[in-house]
Length: 205
Ligand SMILES: C[S@@+](CC[C@H](N)C(=O)[O-])C[C@H]1O[C@@H](n2cnc3c(N)ncnc32)[C@H](O)[C@@H]1O
Image 1 (cartoon, protein in one colour):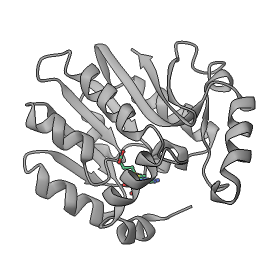
Image 2 (image 1 turned 135 degrees about the vertical axis):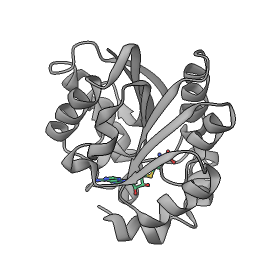
Image 3 (image 1 turned 90 degrees about the vertical axis):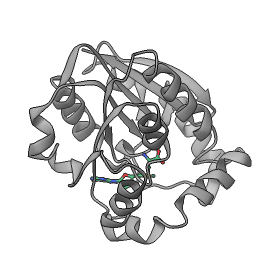
Image 4 (image 1 turned 135 degrees about the horizontal axis):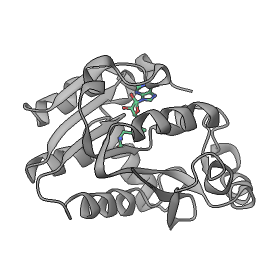
């Protein structure tokens, strides 16, 4: 599992690496652009919403939302990612902080129309995911929504199939979403599959 320094090193080549994996329909990023486009479309159903991005990275998605007038907030633990994203979005409120310890204090004082997290929360264990998503849910506006786009599966059988196909590429240090298993703790969780290894999870207030 990469730590914040690991992500600092990956930051410059990140966009290119993701594109190659997606275009070749290969794990881990097969379906990446579909995930981001669908979240972009969903968020812009509201007029200039506030959006909190958890693990915003180079800001591929949030920069597009920012251009459309969304008010952008975010947390990421990589100083380099923060530097790259901040250059694209000067008015955004970005904070450096490890989300395995929850949300940084300044971001806890707002409520949000959307809280999004793309390809970031698989760095948490399932227990940590559940507790963090419950914490985030409290910060949604009345009609707000959490949208998670990630490597995700409806069932463990689907995950295992993907693991076998990915072979040595499979990253055992990451903990992917298995929706059926998380639903017990997060009953309102909805899922939309976007590729054999990716999907979007929705959680309403
Ligand atoms: C694979 S990148 C995804 C970036 C972006 N959301 C996207 O969809 O392209 C994962 C991001 O999550 C951040 N991240 C991973 N673990 C984190 C943690 N424990 N706390 C804060 N940020 C973390 C990394 O620094 C990185 O920017």
